[in-house]
Length: 274
Ligand SMILES: *[C@@H]1O[C@H](CO)[C@@H](O)[C@H](O)[C@H]1NC(C)=O
Ligand SMILES: *[C@@H]1O[C@H](CO)[C@@H](O)[C@H](O)[C@H]1NC(C)=O
Ligand SMILES: *[C@@H]1O[C@H](CO)[C@@H](O)[C@H](O)[C@H]1NC(C)=O
Ligand SMILES: *[C@@H]1O[C@H](CO)[C@@H](O)[C@H](O)[C@H]1NC(C)=O
Image (cartoon, rainbow, N blue to C red):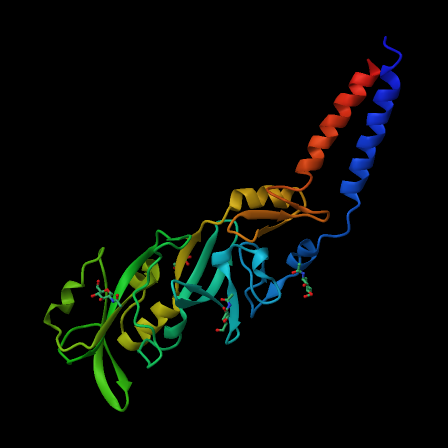
């Protein structure tokens, strides 16, 4: 065996050890510490990735999942429309939300955004048990079921609601006229079909307040990998994923770079032994 090989081997061994010690003894990563903080709002439980807001900066979540704690409830804004978050189910990646502006009030107010619910460009999909419902306001009163009244500036007018099949205006709306506005809201179909319409006004209020399901899509598979490695999920300054670990930031999971160093080390040890 070459006698010069041992000192070289020994030296590279020392250098590698030094590199390893440096990468593993770095001070606690600030983002890791900040993102490990829970954010609690009302009785929704502890909010974690992909959600951010409150004491959790944006890098602790996915950009589209910012929450505000408004009126004692977590609120998310999707395509400019504020929604009250009723529950979050992490294993199924489902969020149950209700239009915040219609909370306890199925009528329009001067501040209601008369915008139809839409998920255009948002990282969400409607859950399978949801359906569109159309509500029309400021109409003339005609003998059609599903009618409730709203009072605006002292004037009471008739409002009607109906479940839509696809984008079709409900057939029962055909004989209604004089309406001032309409809005399409998503509702939970099971709730909408299951409740008896004994009082249209309380029916529509209960249906709107029950909310509907949204399935989210936010790098959840990568996040599980990051969490398994002891990291905390988040995002980088762009819209990419980031795994915050106690030593540093990694693209997907903790120790992924050190894992490579380890392999380097064992192959070196193996070479030296030879
Ligand atoms: C972490 O949180 C502390 C206290 O809220 C704050 O001062 C600090 O700027 C945060 N660090 C980063 C990297 O955001
Ligand atoms: C929370 O609400 C404030 C004021 O309405 C707004 O400026 C901020 O962007 C909201 N934050 C999130 C995460 O939506
Ligand atoms: C909401 O949808 C209805 C029916 O498609 C449409 O007539 C109305 O203009 C839409 N409203 C807005 C604000 O886009
Ligand atoms: C829809 O309502 C039914 C009946 O209350 C409930 O079991 C289901 O979980 C709801 N779906 C969502 C996505 O919230």
